[in-house]
Image 1 (cartoon, rainbow, N blue to C red):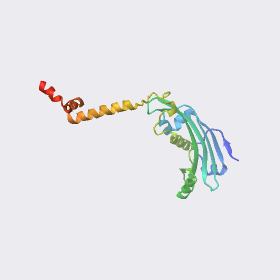
Image 2: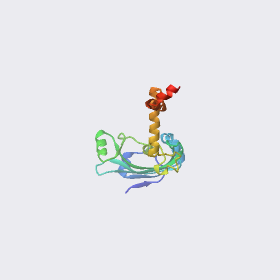
Image 3: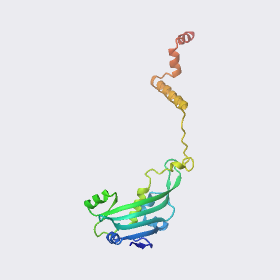
Image 4: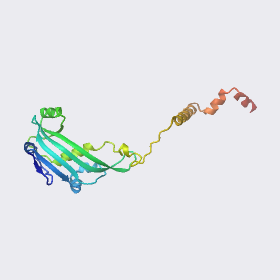
Length: 204
């Protein structure tokens, strides 16, 4: 039976004792605490809009891996790199981590698709670091409005040319290339190809 700890998240955790006892941490990191303690996360976003919710379940699996599973959720404001306006994004992180001390434990944990968290045998750790790491991994590399919001939240208008417009643009571009290479405009080139162009020159 797991022990519930609803109070403020501890800053130092004995992961061996927690995984042996099946401890569950379930609560929130307040906006004020996050602004003060999650510096890397705050530097990566425009704004955090509220409390960060978490549930971390410490346990040992059938092979003896010391693990923590659960969920972390937050709502943040990012800057869209398409239109440069701000937008809200829900971060919902699924936690599935194994604590490891050596290469053998790492390989065994990776075989069962756990993420890896290295710790020394008697080392205490701050679970807020784990939460912050998960939130940072959940952030998009290039923040943009979701595709469903284009035309609503995103001001950038994507214009698709029809085939006639594409053909006209290609022809105009080709004419410019000819003029750049020869110094003769396409209309002048057409005149030279016309046999009656000689008569025009004689009249001059």
